[in-house]
Image (cartoon, rainbow, N blue to C red; front, top):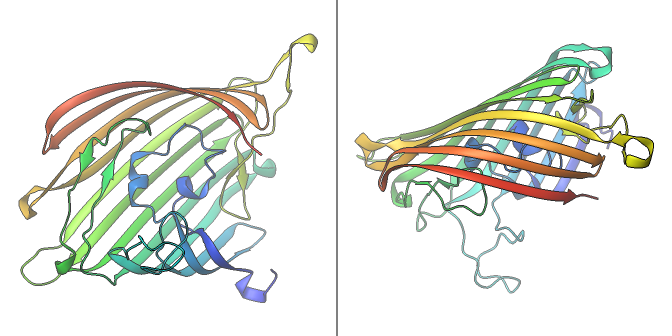
Length: 308
């Protein structure tokens, strides 16, 4: 830490600094699942990164280089730790994120967050194929959209883009992101572009607010005005939320018909203590232009969550 302009340097298995929704821990996101465009997020890999903030936390940058790994952190094919592991299509990533706070008032009670993210993924194993597929914001559901295998033999590189926006005013907050994936291909194969977008709002009926972190450019734990204590007439905090998200995995004219997915989600969160909450989400999902046709899904899910 405190390495001059570099700020903090990390080495190991970590999240690549990419996307406001991804960089906010699953303990603190508003809904039970992240929005549809998170299918593009590189998530956790092994590498080295640096991040720092300036102007009292009003501007923050992060940059890193990573070797793609599996979910256990192994990144070397056929190693004794995981002999079944094979190298993915993309092997190395360079990822950068820049965020700023053009508005920051009353110690974070009012703010505007803007951010831009970029990740270049080098193709290191053409024997494997690329595939994007996603569930309708319910992890136990089937995958509604799926590009199928896109031949790695023709893929030169993958570039990921994200634009971030967040706004907070007292108990009201809003958040939105646009994400895209440009797949550059060689020879006669034309480039592919997949994208997604979401927007959400949340409101604490009991007066709390989402806790924005200037150090990390994400959201942290919500501080409650009162914990759950019926004997004292205290019932914790209540949050109401709504989200619309869209994902387009189609390039039909170029041979990929992964489908389009639109989700409309409503949520209620009851915080008993800062680390305990009961969540309820309803998702109405609309699939169109997929290889398997069209259809709607209605999903209801609940969670009792304790984090530490």
